[in-house]
Image (cartoon, rainbow, N blue to C red):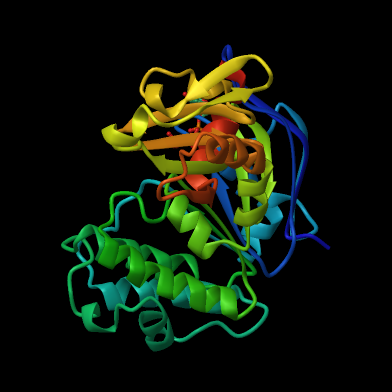
Length: 323
Ligand SMILES: Nc1ncnc2c1ncn2[C@@H]1O[C@H](COP(=O)(O)OP(=O)(O)OP(=O)(O)O)[C@@H](O)[C@H]1O
């Protein structure tokens, strides 16, 4: 049984179609990133998984039942994007209150207050007022509250937004510990490097639809792009360099490196010149390199795979014709 299953789910707000016939299955025990630009529909998807919104069409199943049921049974721990900690209590009191509420209804064992403080890396904050914490500290307290019921599914909506690198690292240490204990983790993020580093699987959504789904390696491969970089040859060699025939049509010579139509080289879909460095984005790096070699333009040649960022931009801008 999957942790989450969305089938043909759509949700509109007035004329805005926030989620558009979305199908998504999350296997148990994995950490999945929901990645997408602003307004892609991430929060709306999450709110339907948590039973906070009903889909217009389609079905949402969580841990084999309705989202409401899974949440009511304490099997889902959530950290929504916004929400402040209540005032007038210490961190320990707040975590204790939520822990006892879970312990009273839980089917199985739940962590003690001390374990929760330790898990969320907030043991040293137990005596501090809950409403007087830094952003990173407050986020770790919210995480402790989210996992107080030892949930099977943890849903985190942009958990590290606006946190500095150190706070992000601390929070991820805590999240990873829950994942290692077998929890399924779904988190949304704008940070590509975070999805790359923390997720077993990345689901890229855009305009309410899944545009890519796989490991970060698979997503990078989907873009099928490689970047070939070379230095622009120094002036003395320019005149001596031969011209090269490309696709039997365009004659390219390194003497005119700055003026040639780089995108007419075989495989090249776009190019950029940065100072003395030329970067060619290509779908056929072998052919591009051969053409450059024939032109004698292979100084400091480097071939690299597409970055996740390039893949993300390509995937999410595909329909706009960008790139
Ligand atoms: N309550 C609402 N009323 C009207 N429109 C809404 C509402 N909630 C979301 N939307 C719209 O639905 C679309 C998807 O929004 P959503 O918040 O799900 O995206 P998101 O991917 O979480 O974005 P972000 O990364 O900016 O948080 C957007 O166009 C948004 O303006």
